[in-house]
Amino acid sequence: MQFTGPTYPSFRPNSNPAGLHQPVGFQSGKYHSNVAAPVSLFLFILYALFTIDATVGTTADIVNIDYRHYAYVLTAAILVHPLEQIIKGGIRQILRADVLLSTSFIYWALLDIFQERFSLMDLSIASVQYSFIYIAVFILVTQVFANYQFLLPAIVKDASKIDVSVKVLLTVMIVCFLIGLFPFYRSSHYDFSHMLEGLTRPRFAAPWARGAGGGLNAIFEHMKYFGYILPAMSALVIVKERKFSGKVIFALVLTIFFSAFEFQGGGRRLTGFLSGMGIITYLVAKRHELRLKHLFITGFLGLAVLVLMDMQLTFRNVGYEDMFTEYEYGEFDEIRVDDNFLRIAQMIEHVPERHEFSGTQYLVWAFVRPIPRYFWEGKPTSPGFNIAAMVGEPGVALTTTVVGEAYASLGLVMIILVAMLYGLLAGTLSRMLQQPLGIIGVALYAIGALALVGGVRSLVDLIIYSYAFLGLLVVYQFLIRGKETRVEA
Image (cartoon, rainbow, N blue to C red; front, side):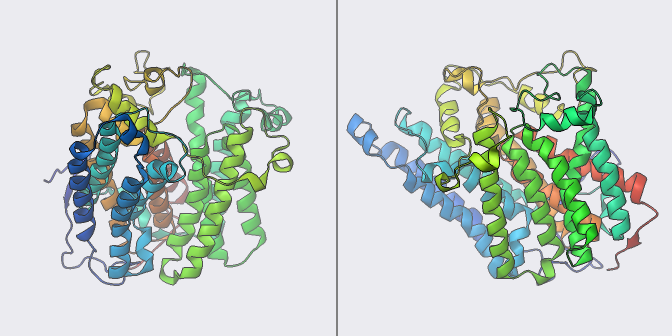
């Protein structure tokens, strides 16, 4: 299928026509499509389907079921993909967007099962097993469609091929820092000390906290997304400086200071996104030199981020003033996610038997997220379903991952459609690494890949994280263009 024109994106099967630049970051001139990975996922789906009817439904049997074996088998099927790519192209293949996307489901959906953080015994056997199946279907479809790609807009192609000096990077960081911090400063009545004091307050007690009404403040809130660019820029300053210099310290101070305001909001996913963006940006920039030691360092940094996120969860409702002194580091013995798998199974229990599918309202709600309700009074305020209300826990925010959302929208059909979108985006990003990437291209890739990983939690999160991608293109257009050097093939 091929669409042309400036407005409509198109996608085409992967190819390597004459004259295409040799890949940067891969060991051969071919895009390594996956074969064994979809087969392993398909076999898992068949296995799960055949065991549904074979499971005896007595109370004793339900109590004795250990659903972890499904999680182990599905995890093994998921890991076939990165292993296949590493064998074909080396350790750097783990940076592929489609690899990061598929393996992130282990964190978002399966980790809680391994840790036995909740019980599934109150649910029907079929709803639990279909949860595993739908997750596998989503990943399978993404891997198949990752062999296709959207045609990138010209501005993305141009921005991806340019390099800039550290001076320009720091100028961009200062501008993004000031723009990103302005909504917090404005909400603090232009009082800097009042703004700083707000950092210690509970998540909904800061001056910049707002409700779901989406008034005039929501327009200014969009400015903060320029701050999401800062972690990637900091990583690039580190790469270009190659030493712990004053410029590196300055870049890190700007990034940490801005990130503290997002941290105060209590959203662990944003902490993970901002931290992960810096890490992935550095790894992509150093992809030619990637070794196992880099993976061990990444693992250590990842563990530190998980501890920070656990601290955030512990103190977000009481305030952060004594967070570092009162947190019990020795009690960090599990990784708390969001009970996502449990909520997927509960969604399957309730929809469509007790609640109808929400239909296309889910897609409208997600994709119009950037439009402030100040300009659209009738803008949808929900995706058309509420798992918290379904399970009798009103007033709390529960998540089901994009799989549960898609199922509540239109069942298996919407799961496949949304997975196709994620697969196409992952394939498009992965092929960016086939081109000579400049500094800005590295940042664009890292932001896009992390947006996909964060987007597993929710489709609207994918939209929100993509603001940083669009923001960097705006920065390129108005601050960088004309000051760059072009990367040659």
